[in-house]
Image 1 (cartoon, helix red, strand yellow):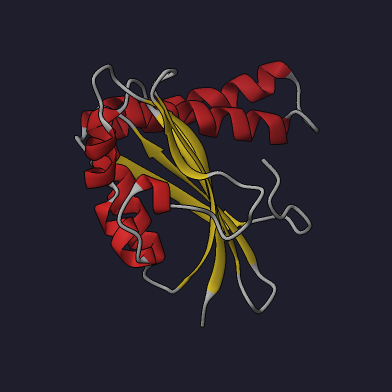
Image 2 (image 1 turned 30 degrees about the vertical axis):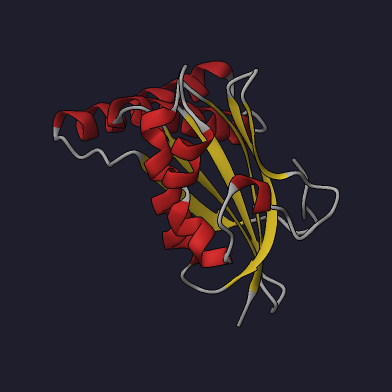
Length: 182
């Protein structure tokens, strides 16, 4: 069974990163979709740029849609983890899966120069997501209590050394009707 997937994110790059560095880091993804270079990494949707490096701004722009099988999650996470060494700062890459049976899933892969910077980005994203959800029902003081618990959990994880490699992902169901919104 094939699934439509959309990968989206702008990855700030360190000075001196070349197209060949990026192509090497993305080799597993490129092999999966049978392309050899950034110029061939086009999207299945004509209005999307695919995967392109803006050398002037030092940004790798990803707005790519394709049809993939069940191993794509592993492949894209490995490829994005390989990009971590070239990142100027930690960033998020969104991955949306549109299954043939009508289920949609939304994932976020965090990539960055260090496991610590990735954990901090994950903490900030979780605080933002939870605070937004809680703001519908609770006061700022009550939300602050939950944020303190989240921060404590991340501090415990850091103290235990339980942080991941150059990429880390979160994935779950996506609200209906949000296909291809950035």
